[in-house]
Structures are given as C-alpha cells and as structure tokens.
Amino acid sequence: MPTWYSPTRCRASTASDCRPARRRGTVSSFLRLPTTKVRDDAGVLVVGGGYLGSAIARLVGPSVTVVRRDATPRPTRPLPAGARLVGLDLSTGEPEDVRRAFAHLAAERPVVATLARPQGSDARFYPIAARRLAEALPDHTTRLVWISSTSACPDVDGPVDEHTTGPVGPRGRMQRAAEEAVRTICSHRGIPWVIVRLGGLYGPSRPIGGWWTRRGPGAVVPGHGWIATNLVHLADAARIVLAAAREPRAEGRTLLAVAPDHTPRRLAYARAACARGEPPPRFEAPIPTDRRVRGKRVDGSHTATLLKYRFLHPVHAYGLR
Image: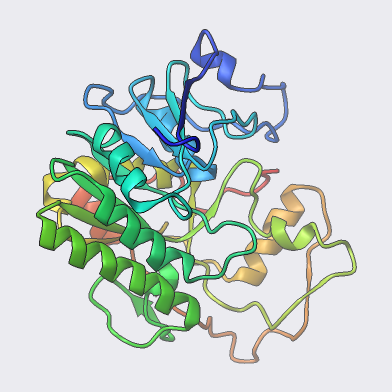
C-alpha cells in the first residue's frame, strides 16, 4: 500500500471512552447525540470523518470503517470503539492507488461520502472528488450515498422539493456537477446510488448562528435576515443518511434532509442567542415592511415519508453551544 494509506483502530476500550464526559446541567459537551445503534450487521464505509461522518460512524458501531485524510484520532470527532480508521487522501492520492485501496475497503458494503472541502481549496473540489470516488469504487459496492447540499436546489422565492427545477448560484452549480458525476459514473458501472441534499447542519458544538457570534459582539449580519432557514440537526442528518443507505426504494433518487421548521434566520439567531444568554445579533437592514419571509423553503417531507423517518428535532433546537 502507498505511504499515505494508513489503517488503524480506535484504541478506546468501550464506546463511552470515545466520548467526552457529560457535565451536569450543560449542553456544551460535543456528544449529546443519541447513541442508539442503527443495524450493525452489514457495516458501512464512511468517506470523510468530520462532524457528520463521525456522527454516522458512532451510530453504525464497531463494524464501521472511516476514511479520513490521515489516520490521526481527533478528540472532537470521536469514533466508536473498534472502528477501523484509514488515512487516505482522495484528492491527492494516485488514482490507481485509490482504486486499489477501495477495492478492499468498499467490498460488499454501502459507502457514505461526507466529504468536506479542504481548507484553501475551492468549490471545484466537490465534482473532482465525486468523480474520483465513483471511479475508484469496486463493482460490488452495494450503494454509494453522496452527501450534497440544498445549495443545489433551485434559488426560488418559495417552496422547493425534489422535483423543482430552476437555476442555482455558483456553489450550487458545483454541487450539481458533483451529483451529476455520481449519477453518470455509477449508472454506467451498475453501482446503486443515492444523493442526499443536506440542509444547514447544526448541533452540539455547532449552534444556530454560532458562526456569526464568534466574530464578536460588534459584528453585523448582512441583509435583513427575514429569510427562511433550511436546517437539520446532526442527530437527524446522521439517521437520514443511514436510512438512505439501506432503504431499497431510495436507490437512484435525490433526497432532501431538511427539518420542517423554516423560522426566519433573524428570528432563529435571536432565539438561539437568547437561549445561550447572549444578546441577539444585529442585522444590517430592518425587517421588510410586509414581513413576508423570503427565500427558498426546502420541503423534506417526501424524503421523510419514503424513508419512514420521524424527526427527532422537527423544530429548531436552541441553547446549544
């Protein structure tokens, strides 16, 4: 194997050793994700072990294999005891070496790709990574679940579902290019595929509006903020992705992982700040006089029905840190 391919095992003796201790009366510890396991018999290969990927791995349990750019354990992204951790850089490894590695890793199991753009790269990373992964998988991969974004949904002022058509912005175009690479290559090779467009991800250590709070008390949020939110809690996102990996009717579909709560961004940020004991953020412009909520509202109800999924957090969870 090439030098950048480095398998290891989580050294924790129990699943609880992989989680920071909970402190009474706080919601700031990283893992408040429910730990109920999700069918641990088949095993899953998770490509990308970041915020979402590590949460998926914890639900799968010890049979999971996780591919990260390096095999260094990360305390803030813990894996279950017994999980296999592989260091493999999909974007820089030689194509033949990547194919050789995945021939062993992806044999007879579903693959979930939760790739995050490396720091310093641009949005072209996604279609390039999608092509390399789809080409590297062995023919007997049972399913590829590609995690996309609701930025690939049309930029319309109103409801959007899986069948809505229309133009998107630059980021959405890159996500669509990645999706098309997955569809085209996997269909040509006979590998089952599913695309999951994920809403804005939040949860423990990633609270609603937290990205702006970190800029300091004097920071001003651009715009009026009277725009619909399209969010999904980490616990729901991880479960929806695993359900998509195992539901036969999901094959060949584009799914939407978004909670049904579309509270305007301005109001959601204010509620989250209040729950954390912080002042609400200041917005650049006032609320529109007609008070009509702008922006797209992504409807994930069809996906929830298909997967027979009931949201743990159908309403935004505030007070997270």
